[in-house]
Length: 398
Image (cartoon, rainbow, N blue to C red; front, top):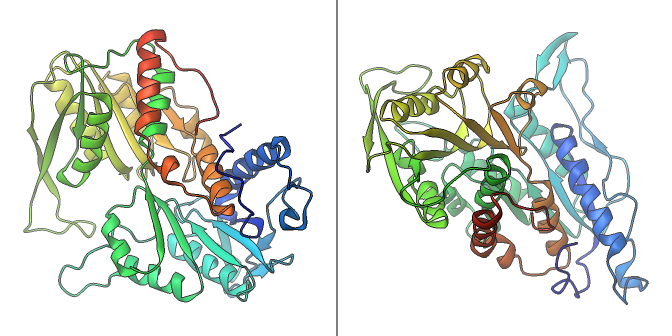
């Protein structure tokens, strides 16, 4: 059970969760935690009208986006949401879903998932008391700045959601969190899953030595440096960085191709190194950095990324693991994870469902989430526990 000391306030409204089809598994896990916690919670006011519907067998609200034969769709809510404190979970990167256009299957793209989110919000017709969108991967977040004549899709998306009546947006490890400047008067939380990464690493590796002589954190490029610095400070180790030398005379797949990765930092020889970034897309950059670190005589290479897309498949990662170049790859369950990935020996999944449930629980009570967002004390407690036991125990903390 989490600490309930800050949950003595009256809930904002009857709690409701809409897990879009793209986010069904994560939504079910979040719902299970909330059901368990609220059933066990001792509160003298639970029987009053202000807490009506507080303890239920499920907080999930059924919705759907059925398609016409043309591929067009509509949003449908199958129960009343009047006065509800509503949370919508959506995974815009889920590539495992499809629909039919004129009888032919078409995989759902991020654009399709985002449009379905808009449809469901429109179907609410403004009846929810408060509306929060939990979008782990921020739609179009890689198109966060303009180069020449380009659209600013992420900023437009944020403004569209606020225009549709969304009160708060929660995302994880946004590619550039400054995009929230597009909606300066609205709620926007960008959360780094550093604690969950460390917890997953410590549970899966019993022989780490966490000090400057035996460990180092690596940023694969200049854009990920703030993540690497934060993680290195939490672990009390040094940080290094690669920067990408690009060929600006060419454009391949919409980007200037990387010519080489150049390293800045102290020697990694004999050290366990952790590469941290926001996402693995094809994974080629991450693997190239890992190979260069092994060439510099790093002991073991661990890769941590919030979103593991693996757009070019898993075979190259299999080969690098077989060759001893990578030791472990850790990503979160915030986006779709195929069974093929979960079965890999080199892969570990950091579960964020308990953390999301904790956020929803506090926000429903209109309680501060500052302590939940501040991971410092929890990280230090886990590291100190690991240094004594060489493992960490399960507890309520997300």
